[in-house]
Image (cartoon, rainbow, N blue to C red; front, side):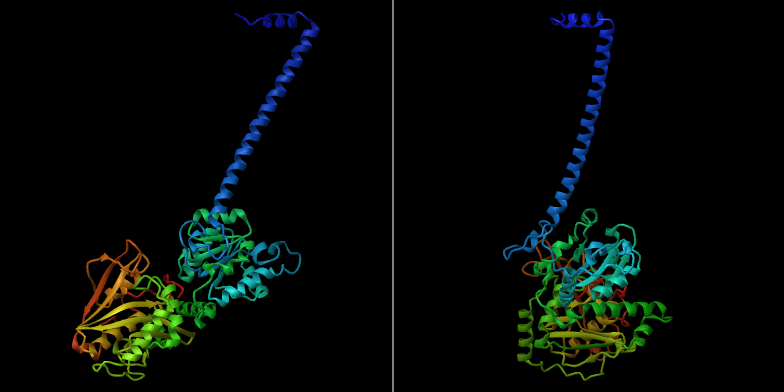
Length: 483
């Protein structure tokens, strides 16, 4: 049944002659207008949905990177629920970030530096945090930025590929993990791209960086002399690597040409802050997989000084190095007796003085020695330091009458290079077991790397690690920790 009135209205329109035709035109026009409005509504809906997606994306990025100040704020709340360690390197954008304008749009002299960012650069450099550049500009921008900011940049990636890729290359170049990097860019798209591709990177805008020096992630527990000159040490490293690429001989010959000098001796109380910093910053060469506070090092050093050398130990004079490292062209200077409870390892060569780059804590037990902590900076990798230290430990333990040297190590994905070096030096690992206690985080496992000691090794531990720089030690160009 047709609803009342429908047919009547239709018949009246048809019978209207010209007037009915006009009505048809009006109806058709209204239909077109209605269809057009529907298309507009659909288009607006699509735009609205798109804006919603963008808004949701920006919200996620904002939630990921929100940095809330306050003394009660924990480090774990920044950048998500995972606690972050202290940042080792800040990767900076240039346009409208470090510079107060756009580099390529300047008619004459490129824009100057943003004063607020210059202040942040200087403060973070003082704390030992490195700076690098990732910019969509020609390479000349890096020199300009360094000149106008007065800062030292240890790496620069200038080009037009993804910023996340540039960050990866910078991390590889510096030998640090991308989880130790913060990225600063004024462009929301660039920040979103890095957040998506590398969620472990702390991503910030320039405005947030003005307050960043007050955050735990940018506040090392201690600031040492080595930290204050860390940028220069990395630049020295780059000059050394460039020289090695041009050198025609073997690695051992190159290290000899560099006049590499390793000093192994007792740590002093004044070294406690640097030792704590080293244990916190190094991961690939850290047997304990945790940081020891300066107070703990102070106690260990003081206890060793109070105990004095055991009767079995004899002081070793300067220049009487173990034959293994000496045959490789080194002059390790052993400046203390074998009893040192906390050892400090120092390194220098013709390119610069790296200072204190390694440490170990030893305990003498019945029949053997145990190294409860062994840590080394990545700046020492590939330069014979780990081999020299292990050789010295074996000789020192043999001279003290020890029959075994044991190095417990918490097993982490990051400290595989240390474990490879131990195996290359003749150590064999026990069956892994839960780390337990304060040795590591929940779920971590620990193995004890053991090496039997022959009495003859008291005079010549050449077989301990082979020639310096050989064996299982990573080269200077492989990844490290930035210690």
